[in-house]
Image 1 (cartoon, rainbow, N blue to C red):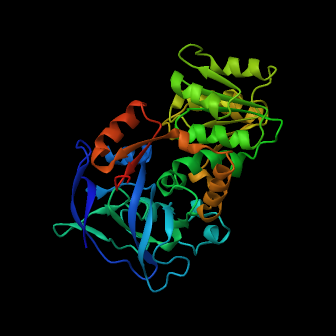
Image 2: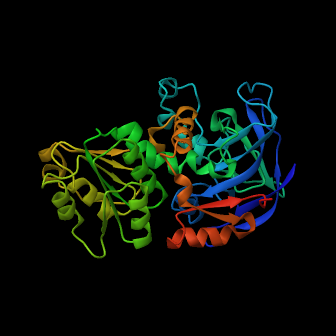
Image 3: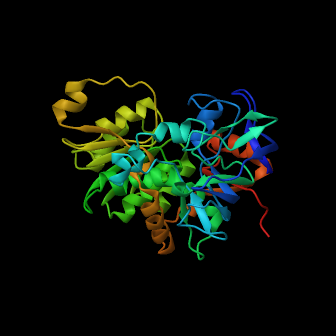
Length: 368
């Protein structure tokens, strides 16, 4: 079928909304009418080719929509279901069977290989294959989505807000709730107060952390961090030595744990150095090369530096958990959102890159 999609042709070009061809879903896939999609920093890294997905491509990996048709082997969904999309996994390897699909042996191929889980493509333009992202390519009016990529959305939750739960929101929240699991009396420092970091702030509040410290350079983001649960904030433009300030706030000991969601190498080292002896630091933002002294920064202080993908989440279980917290008023992630019409995707990109917008959501259909 012919659909409208935002095509990325080259790293120096803007998104172009064009006609493309979308093939029929295979037996374990569904055709979904896309209602909305988040714009994520990962989309931008691929657009400028800092992450290796072959162009031209249709990006977008925080989609949500309404199922229109299902393949013969799809058991969990039916036409009319409201669904949010997340990352793909094979469902057959040892890590998938352990319930840890973020560690799927085929994770890179399925999500960044430009094809569906079976190694084939559903997207083309003028006879040429277009790469797919995360097995969904949600910067489009329709998407073919594997059953494993989708999660049902309850009727009492606005569907259009749920797409970012599948990547950025679950990444930050999962870093805290799934991996760090801080004690109620503990302290946590969170570097980077974008959508991922602020999701970590909200998760720390859900965990009843006693001290929640948000670190950033943008005053409006730090203000929002306080509204969402931070007990203290540090503006590194005003207080460059964030490590000392965090120690001052934690009786000189350092934080019990930390999260680096900044994507900045300097912050990565600060997030490690601000913690107390024997404490973990989770990295969820790729910040490039970091120089560490193994004795002074890690081994000598018995610290751990942990890389976490997608919040170490099983989306089928964790997204419903986050929706439950949202429904109960404990996870107001909708405060991060600014909406854009699909036609304004390049404005959403620009506002996201500049920091003006925390979490941009593209509406494929105009409200009302």
